[in-house]
Image 1 (cartoon, rainbow, N blue to C red):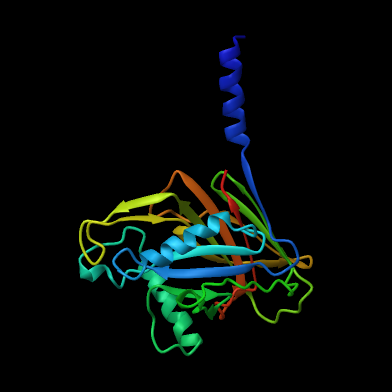
Image 2 (image 1 turned 120 degrees about the horizontal axis):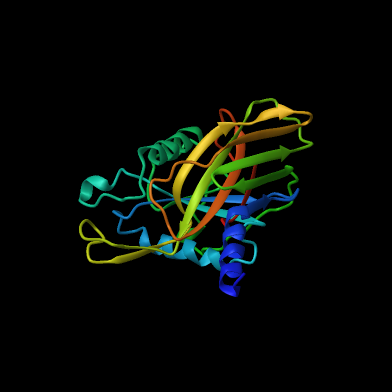
Length: 243
């Protein structure tokens, strides 16, 4: 067998068997949500700041950033290809639950609470003193097998959020408030789904497919977080780069 053929076979086998493992550990992992839009002239600085978290020493282990693109600025003249009415509705549900006066972009939420430090010192303070339990998962192809183990009493059904994230994404904006600007995005939610977890022998489990992607990217990651059925506040989060 030629050396070239062996190399090709090894590459094929490694790609077929590639799995992504996601593990949170017991300590609190924070979920940082950014609500943004390519049609918002105030959003590029927030997008740029969020991109800097790709170099954060606690990326995935202490903080999981995600960027939801909303669609309520599309009417200005630029349709954001990453935007979804579902993401706008999610932000509005947060605003209603937290008694916020309005929704806006750029808007940050840290562990389900409005985070306005971006407009000040931009200091991301993470509290990992909580011990909410372990959120683990294995991604194999388009399938994900997730497990959540906690010692905390939870008197509610639990849901798991699965978000595929895109990185190193560039958009040349042709119209709207950001006309003639090139925007660079990381942590963009390309697809998001919420499914129930099932209690099984003292743990919560689910096996499901990855969400359908609205767009794609060469470099991707995955974010997971658990919340109660009627409460968007994250209980535990986890994430990793996708193989």
